[in-house]
Length: 339
Image 1 (cartoon, rainbow, N blue to C red):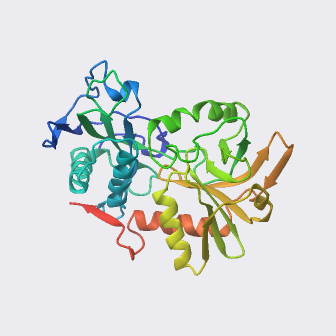
Image 2: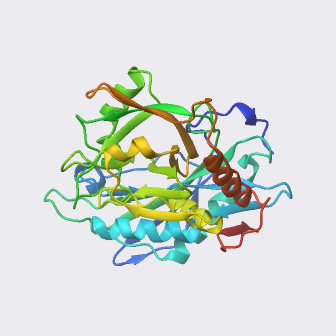
């Protein structure tokens, strides 16, 4: 295992030894290739550069107490990448090829999978880009699929601790009927300005409202939002929200715990009724929200009054992380062992 300060890893790029690549040319996918280069060569007219034909995924590998390496809901990531590919007319990737590439990338970089108990994980980034040259606005005829990995620490510096976020009314991450439900880079580019405003104002991230009416909760920065009240897990439903695999899993676990789950439009006023609130996604799992500030309305909503994560969020977080690391039984068939 590599000599790395595992417990103090930031969430950022870290060079590893190998990545895995595959090309779609002449109407078919080729064989997987292994590369030790961090760079790719692109035609200057590639559609990923001009027309945004670029999609990606994010998942993690976890080293358990038994030293086994586990992947979480690998097939769901493959399916979501294909939904994104359909959404912007890219060539879909066979699910088995996606899974094979991810497993191969992890095995090739096994020494970078952090030890159990360090709080670090191996982040996996599958990337699909249009590499065919086009000057007219049309899909590429050729594509490149890449999987690279890097060891990471918590997404938010404070880990599983409450953060403050601000409502962003002047910027939209995505619009209904647009690309919000696909994992395309353009959605994240659209969020950069508002995220900088939030960070400069001392907040962890932005909370977006629906682009049409500014009446409903949309996404919490790069993550899905959820609220807890009356033994109920509530999360927004919207065509502009990326379907989070972590959120999907938390909904299943909430049901397992006897909670009622509602996925529906969540009006802004309902924030006052939540006992707990959080943001969820692959990178952070759950980030408890301490306070949501609405600068334009000069109003704020407080959760985690004692500055500690709420009991339901804590229970869901601990249960999900325990399944990912192999400390709890995988009753739902979510885990893939890397062997």
